[in-house]
Length: 175
Image (tube, rainbow, N blue to C red):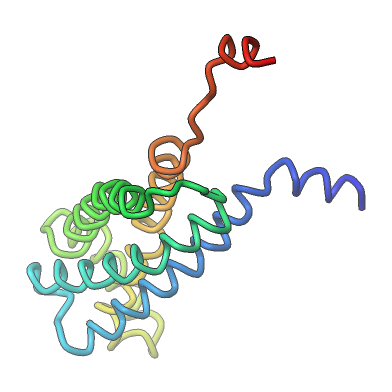
């Protein structure tokens, strides 16, 4: 039991980040799922709008959780910190858009992945009418979400919530 506690303490930030990330991802996907009722993800500009809605929902949901639980920020400049968080997430939003366009809407994505999905879905009878949906969510979950999560952690850890290291010489002088 002591080893588990030690392992948890050593990796606490990453473990909590992954939990918050899963919750944020679910929240964002629910927003995308709702938007898909009104828009068609197979049309490029509508796929863009769907992803934008998911991104905005995800950023607004993720910031307070990351600030309080993951990185335990005490920065008094909340607006500035939120702005940095949003800008960093904007770059990974572009990554998400690029991945979704490349694998869902582009000819290359349709040939590479969509063709494989069509073959799979025709073999599994209940999926045959859901090829577009299965393909969309496979790309969203297994390609985009993984890459975006890794990039978001790196940006948050080192750019947004990174603790400023104190000058060691001034610390020694104060003692």
